[in-house]
Image (cartoon, rainbow over all chains, first blue to last red; front, side):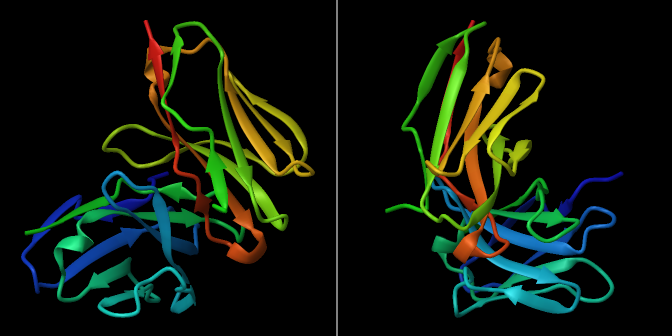
Length: 113
Length: 112
């Protein structure tokens, strides 16, 4: 059973460009979470999605950030007009049930030049 | 007050010793508790989950939960150099809903 998959593993963008991060949950998991880890800081929740629905986006910056989990295909975290402060590791986690164990993907390390 | 607090590190123990990691949480409505291990430059790896008061053992790891004291701990017996990592305490429930709220982590070094 494949684990949570994320791609790309590393992404370099220049200021002002767009970043698209993809996450495929574990088979049978319908709950997807995105977390961000800034350099030398802890993991912070960003958004929780189920298929075609955003359940909780309370941790997501109000501007430039958006997320989706379409009926078909991976979940996408989109960052528009990236700034240097967006440089971080972005992790996706999936869970089979609400309030259950969450399993993390390998992460996407975003570097903004 | 931080939602999840872990004992300040770094923590250094000799090989073969018991490593004790502690965590307190502020939201009494929290229902699910987890310990993750994160090696430098890697993603968090789930090592223990605990949902009810008492102890839960899995191999060399024992998680302890005391909801009255809002306290969770992780004991690592017979510590190995490969256990050297940052250990993250995380909780679900209460006002945080179904998202994980993490502590800042405790860096553990096991010396050969």
